[in-house]
Image 1 (cartoon, rainbow, N blue to C red):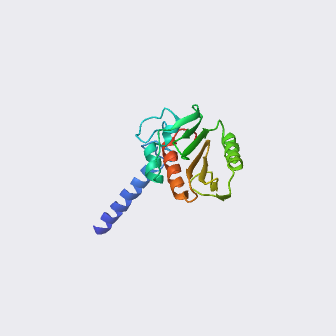
Image 2: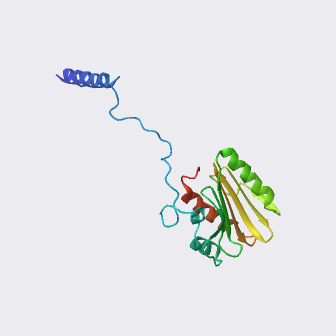
Image 3: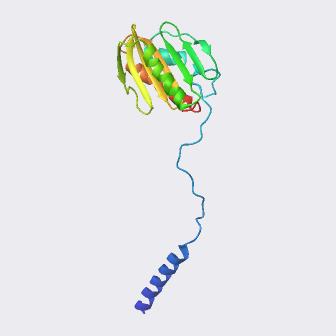
Length: 178
């Protein structure tokens, strides 16, 4: 009797395995890629109206300890802006039409910034980045896909502050080709 019971269990297991072979999966296969991009948002989580909204007065004040004012965009469009937050607190943002355009713009920032010294690879998780000093400023340049960001703060010891500011910009930029 025991042999018949074991045989029945084995037969039921084999039948279950055979029945499962070749059947269609009950759920569709999904991609493990990144989620679709969302609109770029400001610090308040709402869609931005200007690229200068990617950093706020509070961001600069909190991370640099410097007094900041509402950003005054110098040239501003949907694809680029130069934002002055008072003093030497500044951010430039460019969204290139292609990755090649953004790469060329990034390379141009390295040539025109007047760096005294440059440290490449200043921030991880991006395509290109560099930290340097020039004319009493700390400067960080970042390119992630089509997005190019340059941020400057007074002094030459602001690398950590600049990386934190860039991190905020990148986390808010989402759908800007990054």
